Length: 108
Image 1 (tube, rainbow, N blue to C red):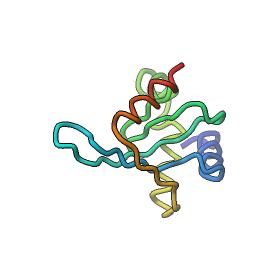
Image 2: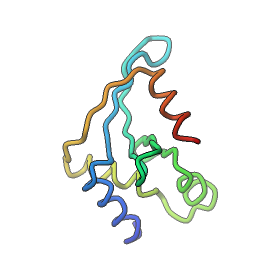
Image 3: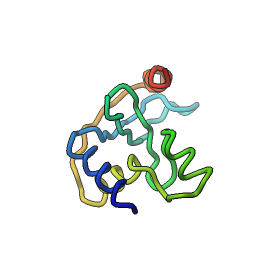
């Protein structure tokens, strides 16, 4: 993990931008699914994180997925640190439709 990404991840944690989200009404079974999210620095965008697997940010798409320059973006590292260190995260419970609207609005 690069020093720059580690610093950005720690800053996101310290600023309270890392959240645990419970999504209600997910899929045909109307089950509840737990994901993580990291707000952007300006708090206008929400990056969805599946620990160790995926982040919805541009850095993940280009630096991790396409170019293979690193194994994770700082959003993923922040979530992994929170889990590993047992950090109490803000917990938000929303419907699948609310998540969909938030994601769409964060793209603009």
